[in-house]
Length: 444
Ligand SMILES: [Ca+2]
Ligand SMILES: [Ca+2]
Ligand SMILES: [Ca+2]
Ligand SMILES: [Ca+2]
Image 1: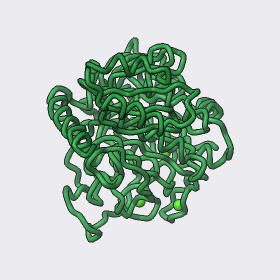
Image 2 (image 1 turned 180 degrees about the vertical axis):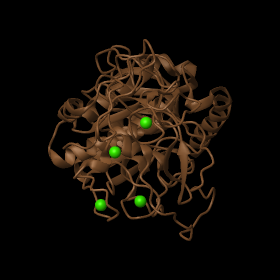
Image 3 (image 1 turned 30 degrees about the horizontal axis):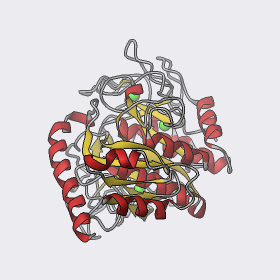
Image 4 (image 1 turned 180 degrees about the horizontal axis):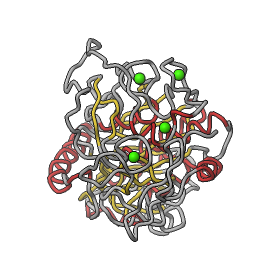
């Protein structure tokens, strides 16, 4: 048994090494599906009452190397399955379907050098810069929200948000982070060894404490759920482990929002994955039904988001990215390599699956090593909407995910060049790219 587990981990290391060289494009570009040889997600029928016992039984019967066992968002497990027994597993009466595992990736580019970023640094002695209002938080007007109450005094928005990502820097003084769960083999906590998840977390809820940055929902409790490794890569089987944890613990910890700034290739069958045998879709549908709002990045491949998951799923809130360089509308800020101020970001996915747009270029936020960094990607856009959802929930306790989405839609601004007196307002679209209205965080 121990030997099997070791070979299971070694396989992942090997596959990660192989796949990373293929996917290291700019801004987390990932269009083609990258299946993992020999590794599968086995989804059990709903009629199975004890998925742990059934997973172990099927595993020992066929000599499988078991990975995760899922019991809440989904009944099933991940496993190494030799070709010789694959059909036997598929034909087991307790099995609904077997899906090949696939690579998923964080949707952000590498960090740029930032004057506030201290690069490495560990321990709590890192000097913290004075607090700045990030342009994205300003642009969606969280600075005008009575609930966010951004005034340099550290009151906290009492909403709990799961960050399903590379983890969170658990020692970062500007974050109210909780070590919740790691689904990455070889790691012992959800501490962030990449930086991406810490950046996403800060956009949602960096504290209004006078240092560093401030998030859309300042001081919100951020549950670190680690499903991507130090390179920002992972597998569908790891992501489902994270969704399963959120679903199992949502009511205990009152987690009402989950952000996923990641994805892979796939599509929406309109039936929660039961037709196209998509276990992540099934897991997300069950998790949303349990009352958790999912905000997800549209992806950075300049394609229709219907080709990427979870972006394509109708049950989630899908977010595209705009460029904003000055925190206000009016297109008077400086330009970027991803487009001019107040325009749709050139890398962003688009299309009918996109629900909202939010700032996603040159975003300043928290980073690993108790530092700060500037990143670009739809990864940065999605947590602006997660933060707005948290503010909405703080004012409308007990809202269902559908109510949160329609509440945010009722105040969002359609793309346009009109700029209001608060410096809010729409943005210019790239012709032919439906990109969702700009999320608005000021109104309850
Ligand atoms: Ca503002
Ligand atoms: Ca405050
Ligand atoms: Ca702060
Ligand atoms: Ca602007």
